[in-house]
Length: 312
Image 1 (tube, helix red, strand yellow):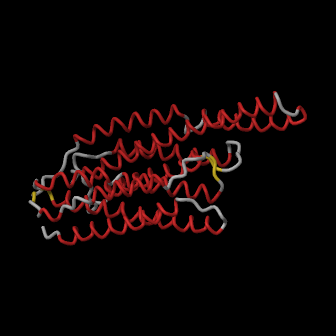
Image 2: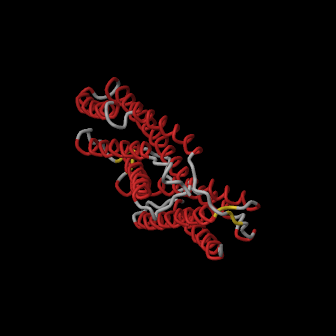
Image 3: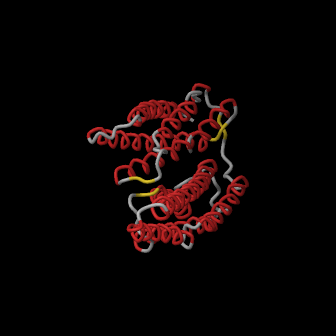
């Protein structure tokens, strides 16, 4: 586990807090400042996911610093750092692609509906394009501009390297029995990640209310489940080595928490897709959601059974 005396993580906590404030500023700007476009774009969904993830990281860091009974191991901290970094990168990519789609649509409207279209509708289409371009320029000058996101990702990358040098408390190591390491856990995490990825609607960049909920839940589930692949594989790799109790049980607890959250997201996706069936909007994603639920339950049983057998 991490040494609280020598690892203050104050600067990192302040960074997460600043990013969280920027995200809240972006949400307020989207609600009250930026022009409201028809439907919901991918960045509109992603900003809420990014805010929730950084709020979670901030709360964990604050509890760890102020509660002497709350412990955190290095692998869990590194996962949170990577989770924050990849969330920033994902939001950056969604914002870039969304701006490209909006500019492409605007160019098509100018060509097809203004230059070669009905002259009587020039004013209407010009007003529509002005609203879209105003939205884009508002983003460029807002809290979630690409320049700010680039700085966030750059600083987070620095902390990725710094986490390797964090000091840990000296603990007694144990040689755990080989049957406490399941070779299928990290494989099932990969299968679950594929199911989560296929549950994402990547064929469009604009969504209605239900579609935005589906997109947000599926992206959140994919982010959560992919966070468990590396620690699960790393734990299995160390099966022939002595490990500390905090690392062994802490990793399994982390994996179990990730699986439970993933199970909840797949259940929510299943409910949404059943609703889509009732309004004739059913897609293949109901199958991937069902597969995700089954794999999540199997993973949870496997992880819990290994945790219950630990007697160190």
